Image (cartoon, rainbow, N blue to C red):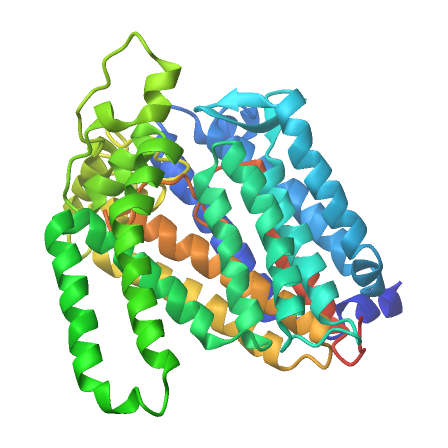
Length: 447
């Protein structure tokens, strides 16, 4: 028995396991802080299974069993069943359109009974990471070729498109984090530059008056033509590229961005994005909301209540915080969804800037640890998977924290291992412990 235990433990990164346990414990503590009421027997409330923190404790127990099971699994199974699991995940996401339960306007949950629900879009992140690693690690795949890059992008984009159809814009954005893993394996940096430039252009379109932005883009193009005029004789296509880029940018600014906000996004989604840059969105322009409610006049109202309350809660914590169970904003339920998407506010109010800094440093240490694990892998499969895990966790942290302090629109992304939710906790548990299992067998070359 001891030999078997030693064999299982051999090569496992226990630093990551301790970090995982600490973060899950912090999560349960944060949920407890916002829900516990004075005078309640906290031991009984934890064991009752009726409060969110007691449910999260049950979830963590289930996740611990799943984690042990994964560590006992042969690493070769993950490569063998990667594509099959990905297909299963896509089918599961499609099943939500038939079996799905509508929660907060999103039909992306499958009821399991007993008050528990499964969100396939969350679980599918695991299968996508495995499928992407499987594809890139194949011997016949040359990831420097455009064809391979397109196939890899489709693998990541398919569940993202289904998430958009389920009105889960936040989870759809998470799948863009797989670009980091692809970039590590040879995806051209120009793609990231183009993507970043598009994001800057969208923000500029929201902030700057349309005609003024068109003039600015025209001036930039004219200056470039003037500065590079001597090179046009040697490179005749350069002028065409500059003019084509100018036409594309003006077209995106004048037609594409307004069309997306008025016809693709829901009114509340457009409002949240506009409020992030300090602007108000006129919902009467939103055709999608008008089609749903043709008899109602769309409201012209900034949707910044959640963020405003979140900022008040975090700001009230000051440098050292109000103390454990002494927060007035989070315990007073002034912050909406404070046990899920806005769980970071409980830390900010209770432990202040210092507590938040220590908490984020723990996350940073975890990310560096995962990258260290990624770089010591012999197998391309394990390395791609490890970078996928790191990018998913980083994206969740960056977006969730930025969301609570008003630097990013509210898109409903949980804080890894902290926010309440069985699907989210299970997803990150499986992601991390598959990584630890692969790392334990890092001397093997998996394909």
